[in-house]
Length: 374
Image (cartoon, rainbow, N blue to C red; front, side, top):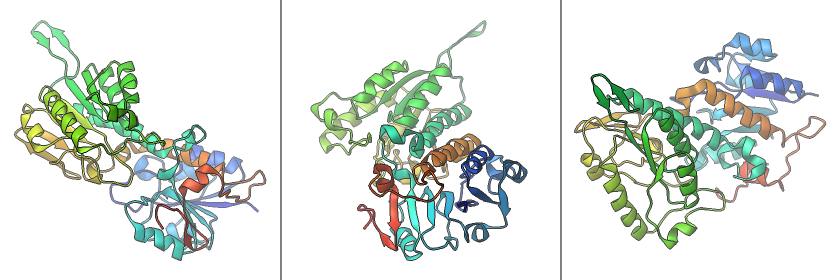
């Protein structure tokens, strides 16, 4: 008997993405799944109901009806109200486990198996399932476009009969997936780009994109990266030295894009009020970490803060601002992830010894089983 997959309509504020697209619906059906999509789920991302139906999905009236008999429930963010799901059904999405431990308890109480896509380990086998990378990549791209929109000058150098326009200077703080895409996008638009990161491996990556690298050289940098590829929290002494160097750099910039996040912790402060006030009027700061406390002390979620003519932009949910492509990549991540949860006969087969399954499973058999959240 075919496994049933329900695709929820997102309930989170500022969320325009959807967990499947007509493209991935076709591929899932080809693998033997039955797909139920809540009517209107894809509309904010420009995927209309008739496209899902043409791909072979059945439309459901609401989340409860879609999820009621489903073996697997797919979402982008955890629904505000957990739909009624049958015992041992799988809930798969970006469930924000660090942000809401009560919700994890609710999954256990509901006797469902919850798997959080943010916890996919950064190993070679899991690259095609890495939602943080796929979504951060688009966030970095969109951040530069938003900066260009609010910047009142041009990005590239232009030589005209009326005189020469100087290129914009862009400083990217954090050279992870979002930062590297921001660097590449700013370079394509003709800006002079520099970047900083605490991980020594980032230097070569930044320079390969044609940007200059700004970093305090120290022995501490050699241990600045976790085994999972994330940045570690640095010492107070290192932070002071780095802050001094950053302050000297920021005063010369037109646009600053901050991307630094540490899983499970508030975003590190990179740009202080004094640094903001040192920038010239018309400058732009895009804070991609605003929803986790912000890399800039003056940024506010969902707002554009003006400080002496410097605009600090803290838009909610940056990947959702490019929802069509963000949904396409996310749905492919889920498609690849489902491939390790189902056996060759099309039956659910969670291998709890599998590194990816073990890393992502929050609850199972009515218990919270992930060691980080027990």
